[in-house]
Image (tube, rainbow, N blue to C red; front, top):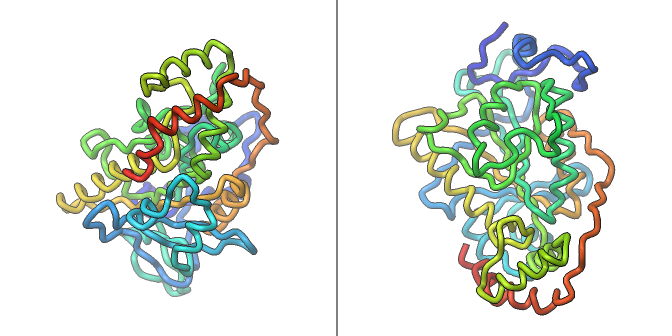
Length: 343
């Protein structure tokens, strides 16, 4: 058995779906081999970041396969306002030949066949309410069982789903499940290097969903489950407050999540560089929630990964429609929405 040391490993079996006798994590970890990927050229994704605005962000044009475009956080955040559509952001970015791949630090040169060794790519979905999160979460839960033998008795959400309290556990799960390629979390935060050493052997592809802000806010405001929750939210908005369990919380919108999350990633990269530690490799992908299935398939294919089987359309239980929905939405925008351009 090979020890994970920076190569992109792949299971010896081509079968990515486990049966009822799925072995435990520990019994699966030795069935690995080095995988060689025959991309045109190796591309390092160690970013030359001097400020947060330099962070590269990739967008997807889904036509026949994938047409990636690239921008940076500074340009994206300036253009992303309440009325911005995904196609507008895509058209303002620059076309690139492919999504970036990270060569292994211990195998930077091609072998005699012209193939290169790459870090193991891992896709992480950074989810939030009214952003297609329920279906993807269920897909991650089923995938954990199929590829790593992990079950969740009595739980609907997958292990380490809440990044506020369990981000280090999720990243450790990536190490424990080498045959698993797709992971999910919400409230994503990157722990410091003191909390979690650099993940030198993987390339982390962070997929953030895009939905137009006003459309998201209108949908989130409608979904309050009960009349009592409508009343609580109405009273809170009179003081420009929302409550954490509500779906209409400004910090849960994808631009706010991406803005917060990038800071932790940049801090880890810069800390690694200043301490002469091999840097982590991160890729940020913003995808359109209207084309989320196509986006998952395209990014998985771009990195040579199996597709993530997605269950059928999830149907939420209908909640109460707040009678003062329009008034509450206006108050929400008055209190919070100007902050969108401050991110």
